Length: 245
Ligand code: C2E
Ligand code: CA
Ligand code: CA
Image (cartoon, rainbow, N blue to C red; front, top):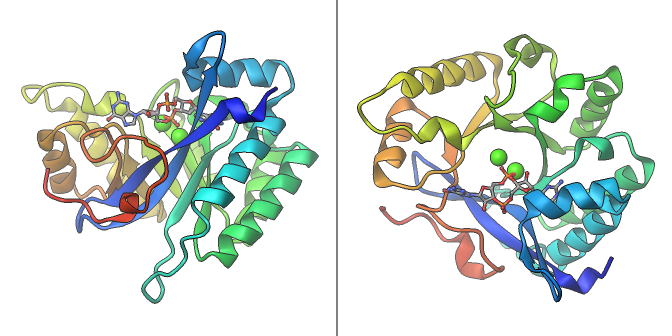
């Protein structure tokens, strides 16, 4: 594992109703001298299989500290979200938990809020250990998000018993064209349910002004996507509010 071959891209998250910047998601990039640019969908699985995923997290956390956590002069009360992707196997790993505690202290000191994203389909084997760990993290002010929500075999029954703060609706729900509005009904149902449970909803993969408008009208609170801003190297401009698409 060569840490310097890995970089971080940051994709802003926005409040869709006001256009305000609400945080960033950190996405890993591997620039391999032999293989070129390898997408995370490929190398994360490799890192997991080879037992390198904690080393990789440590690298990403160091980049976050360097890039993001030097920005902490917000208007009173505003704490943007720093969202980090977590592999399910890391949740009850002692070394990873130590990394998270250290990161969380730095994130809090810089007036950001740490959010851990776990992919829904990986949570299907949800154990008491995972629930217990989520509960402990939340007591420390760490937020928990379910990623790619709606893919795989969603079991809505688990939502009320799961200590979570956010659902990230997978981008497949935005993909159909305007004539079929079934997806709107599904998104609306997810929003109503999440609302009743006090869980925030974020829509992923917003690419067009039409999608943006649909989500706003459905009442979706937050979103991200290429049409709003692409994942990119850290820059202060990432924290600017959304201009009209
Ligand atoms: P994800 O967490 O669902 O991240 C969002 C992915 O969707 C990113 O791909 C992002 O570039 C892409 N995306 C964002 N907006 C749009 C859009 O409008 N349209 C489309 N078509 N795509 C959009 P990326 O960066 O290739 O990451 C792929 C996946 O790799 C992530 O999916 C995440 O699950 C995983 N991943 C990335 N970094 C890490 C990491 O450090 N640790 C772990 N465990 N997983 C990671
Ligand atoms: Ca994610
Ligand atoms: Ca996702």
